[in-house]
Each structure stands twice: as C-alpha cells, then as structure tokens.
Image 1: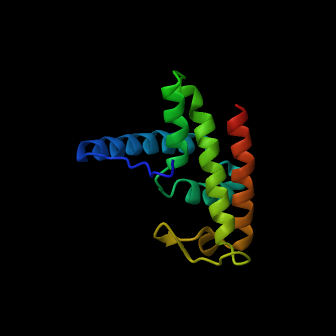
Image 2: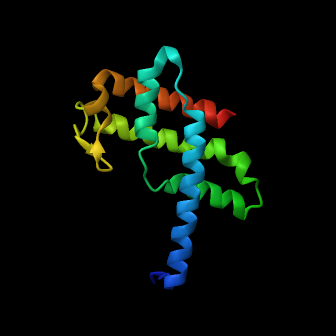
Length: 140
C-alpha cells in the first residue's frame, strides 16, 4: 500500500501540457487585462494592480480550475471570471508577501517588486484592491 505512484510522461505529453498551460495563461491574462482597467480617479492604484497581476507567471491555479471545468463538461468561458479572481487572489498574496514588513523582497518574476516601483503604501492598497476585485470577479 505504500507504493509510490509514478507518472510516465512522453516528450509529446510534456509538449501538449506546456501548450495547454500557455494557451490557458494567455486566456486568463486577457481576462485579467479586460477586468483591470484604469479609471481616471485611481490611475496609479490601477497601474499598480496591473503591474503585478499581468507580470506573467505560469497561471497554474487558473489552469487547474479551467481544465477541471472542461473535464466536467462545463463552459470554460463562463468559468473565466472565477479563474481571473483566483489569479487576483494569488497576485494579492504575492504583493503582500513581498512587502518590507513581510519578506522584504526586491525582485519578483525578474522585475522589481510592487512596493519598489510604487511605494509601500500603494503596493499595500494594490494588494487589497486585487483581493476585493477578486471577490467581485468570482461573484460575477
């Protein structure tokens, strides 16, 4: 009963998985970009949100959500707001994790962290705004 399960993947399997991850990441990034638009009253805050949420990443969490939806026969387009919200929660957690009061990181995904670009106050608010936006996206 303690046997380890080993997954044997061929090169073709790995290529197919990488292609699926790339397509999903593009789909979710487009959804994030459409959701996170800059308003005139809060342009810097919106820019800080977009800086972190659209800075790349593998988007594994939304991929797993969308693939589960697809496997269960659901409509992936209708699940996009949930996937976008999930990615916003992740981005929020990374912004807050990088703050000086936490890990005080200077670099995230090869770029200066949010608080290094926008300042600690705006970074904190951008993380909070992403979390709030995530709930809005998920509830839609």
